Length: 284
Image (tube, rainbow, N blue to C red; front, side):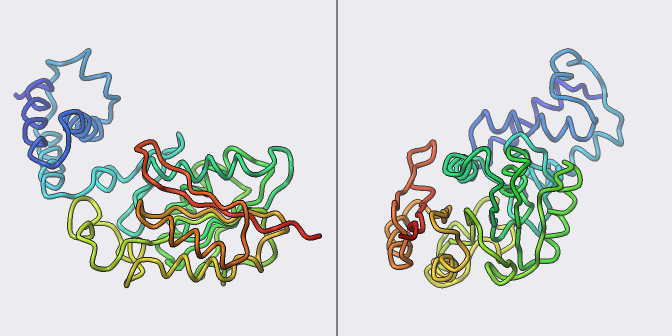
């Protein structure tokens, strides 16, 4: 019977064919086998000569072939970690990415720690942003919206799994789903232009198109939200967008046109423009 050591060595070698680093190949092979065996990754280092059953080996090989075909590991495992929360993901939701944590960080930074703030997360998908904020600020009330009923069903499972009662899930397009005013509106909307080659490559080929691109130049969602955000923000409230690395100028112009001030763009850990924010002026 093949051992854990041999299975992982062969799988890692095969995964290096994908456009990823050697480190990524090692991680992905480990994650897939750990999932099949229902063990932690540390098991492999203390039990390298362990022999999985033939059924387990067959299941692992099936997942490996799907990964070699480009299917994202997160979909194969059915979950992705975001902000230290293990979140269920499906083909109905975008896979939460590390750079989106910047949106969470900035929202926490801009709003008071003690106040009972109201926050709207527009296009919540798996619920990643809303649930991360809710876990950090249990006194806040988070309204999370999405147009997709399938995505909202996943977000609800994640909400229940983490026992976050301060999140309300609402169906509808952007601000159509909410009522009242908020201290912050946050969104990671679809922003990839329709003709962008990235839609045809890598993991995004398997993600829902609705969550990736609004068509055209990719800026439609920003236009729709920013044009109405002022109606739904309290005086001094914040609008925060995640966007593409080359879209900051356009998004800043939209926030300016919407009457926002204190507009700035913040870069992610790779030094790319990632989040643009603006503040509704305080009333005189």
